[in-house]
Length: 253
Image 1 (spheres, helix red, strand yellow):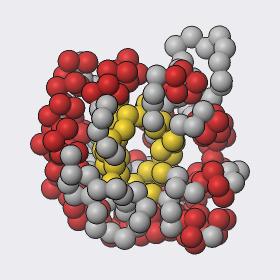
Image 2: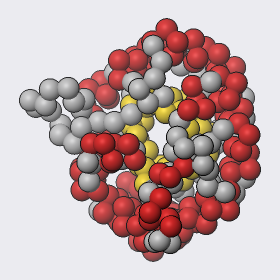
Image 3: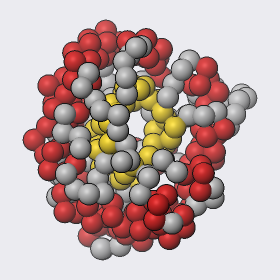
């Protein structure tokens, strides 16, 4: 069975003390994770070492960076490389979050470069894709997301993409209180798997975890995660509350 993942994206929130307190509160919720389930904490860069240490000795619990740069090293003040992230024990890296695309103009080509660097340093990317409201209203979300995937991922070999993690984010449902229905999430995530199968075959497509990201909360997580092509969630606001995120973790298949 492919990995079922509850990934917390803290974004630019929480002090270190509050973040450590939150993780302490959540450790009990991660104790019962099965072999195919994971909890991932995507935390601000300065907290990575501290949170990694908090998770030491815990099974199926990992730390993620929220981004990395598309160059190996050099005079790029303020950026963080995959090599640096690997050197401090980072497990995952979120690549192409909608906020990075929108606010920092990250292109599909740049994201392909970031994916390559992550894989070179044996970091696991969580590749984000998804459409804005105007794309959804025009009913062109499938082709839009397909293009994101093809331009950023289709250069990868079958070996590289086996067991990959993709997060589908309907941008119109991030931080708005709107949520795609479980049927809408299933429809497009099933389509993503068809797109992947067209390039890599059904067996490899079925190995790829596709998360849903967009106002996931304790009240709707179980229904959304129950869909056959939804393999967990990339969770924003609700991941900052221990009781909420604990319930989301427990909603994994």
